[in-house]
Amino acid sequence: MAVTRLKRSSILDDPKYISFLAGNTPYSAGVFESIGTVTVGAGGASSVTFSSIPSTYKHLQIRLTATPTSADNFAFQFNGDTAANYSYHYLAGSGSSATAGNGVSISNGYLGYASTASYPTSVILDILDYSNTSKYKTTRDLLGNDANGSGYIMLSSSLWSNTAAISSILLKCDAQSFISGSTFALYGVK
Amino acid sequence: MATTYDPIATQTLGSASASVTFSSIPSTYTDLIIVSNAGSTVTTNDYIRFNGDTGANYSWTRIYGTGSAAGSSRGTNTNEGFIGDVTTTLATEILQIQNYTNTTTYKTVIARSSNSSSAVTASVSTWRNTAAITSITLLPGSTTWIAGSTFTLYGIKAA
Image (tube, rainbow over all chains, first blue to last red; front, side, top):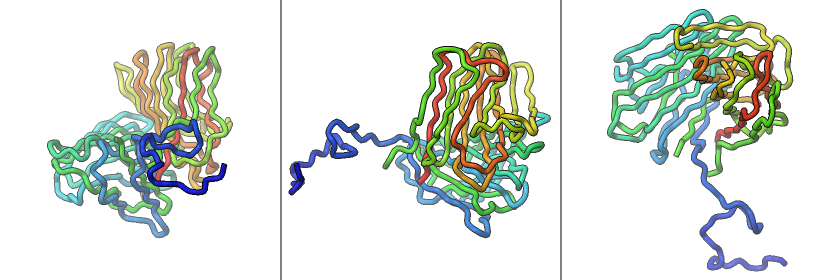
């Protein structure tokens, strides 16, 4: 039977369906949503920023695969804060030994050490309760790179001593740049 | 907004098996995640291979804690990537494989493995191949996965 006319009053609003076929699965909004993606273009980038982050999620996750122009630390800053409001701890495996370190009252959070410019470094960064204005912000991340004889696997946690909701995240190296093709994706968790 | 974290496939072993393979992986996602709760017939390490590649095209670095010691080790020119420690007690492991369809870079896996009977481990493995990943094989070293082991493959799609 052909559809010749569709009246607005005849459209059911609830439940929402993903197609007009009878018996289809009702639409269900996801709890893990992609907010934005950045792929570094030709010429590289000294930093990557996610700005105007919506406050409607519960947590954030950044998934990145990036290569520095030369071995360097990966780091981040929130809301453009470049002051000494960050601290961190890390546990690192170098392939020969397990070591730990920390930083106090520094100008950025710490992701880990990208020890090679020849192989990509993968990072999963979790930022829990990012929009809560009653607490400082704690992050945790897993970073890894392996260049067939060198490399690091690291677990890190950082603290941003600020109760402001996070509305922007800047990702950078200490001194180097990200090469073309490095990718950064921001996700929101409801 | 469409869901971004999709279950692609799940395998639950009804009997012991030497390996588990996810094949014909769709290329429509950005990253892959494998979540497993698995055990092995004897205590061993577990490993990962891509696209059926059994050549010496992998390398890895790991950090581990056994309850009495912490350490780190690596493997070079190995025939598989490294995940963690598995025993007859089920281990929980989460593997992250980012940009798996990228055809210009080598592939990196970062993983966390937790086994209360053996060790907690974090590892990174590199597959020195720029091919897009279309299949993933998970295998315990020189033994078998036990019945009841579960493995789930998820796809994450960036905007």
